[in-house]
Length: 489
Image (cartoon, rainbow, N blue to C red):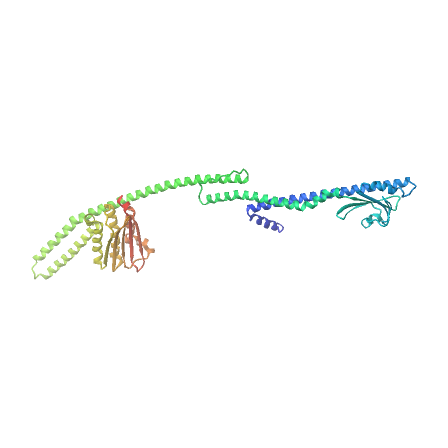
């Protein structure tokens, strides 16, 4: 397991590189390996050529030694004929040979008797003294020489043959000299080719990455195209198939969402119609009830008060206790009649149809807030516009509930009602400086404050209802009604 850790680190490092760099490094490594193999091949070939030349030189030298031994056996002249034979062998100019003794002293050359020690003795000393055939390679004055020694049977020494091998070894040595430059040039060309190819591959991968980024961001309309037929091309085709499926799924989802939205709109419109019918039925019932209270109960109560007043007038002045009871009954009856008229006004604000929404709101707000001790500031901005009866009735009921909340719960000193007729909308604001309430308790207070009914009526006429409040900082109700939609009701 520990031996695998370095390989895993290298693999992790390579995977962290860009594709362009991975391809470049990979190709460069393969080229380097190929160059190394080629260099080894050239080196091996050159060495084999040198070895072949050395073996050939040694073979020829051994043949010379054998030939000279044969001449000495047939001749009684001793070494006398040897210079002539060596002269013939040296006539080519590429070969110099001599016969030396075991101490390296030259016995005879192609020019006659030798003088002194052979200059190659230091190079061939071990071979000469051991009477062992061999060959040596050395350079003299910029030239490469092959020097061979072959022992003779009839001489205590042997033949030393020297050959200038520049022509024989020119090709191997030239290859060895140019090998570093050739390898470097090949590596540069291969690296450049690898970089260009990696750039070509990386460009296509970058385009594919951008295309997938578009798909990931939800843009599936633009197709993924490629002209490649390799692995990258097949990958692009797979991504294109995925994109097509995502596009089909997206289109199906959009269609389903549109259908769902249409159904929601239809259901919402149906709910609005039902709520509108309910509210309309409530208004009709309010009108009917208000009419009955006005025609029957209020008239009967007024007649009863008139009868009691007539009865009081008929009681003698000295009947004080009776007159006091009658006066108390008249007072309570008057209060009851006043409360009944206020109930009738709340059930059916007659001023809407007669004077319009603004006058009805002003009248109702004054009737409800002034008796509670709150100072009313009623403001109208913009040019008043007439709205459909159902819209005005819904607005009146919303603001009626807001005014009632101030009168019943706020304990306010000041109240303000502002009706702002803007170019495209009607904004009505009702606010007070009363005790307010905690917004977190709105749901619990919705029933007591009538917020549910206010919201329902606002939704029916496509108005937006906002209520803001804080404990000890009063309450603000804002209703914004789009005029165009309201007039289309």
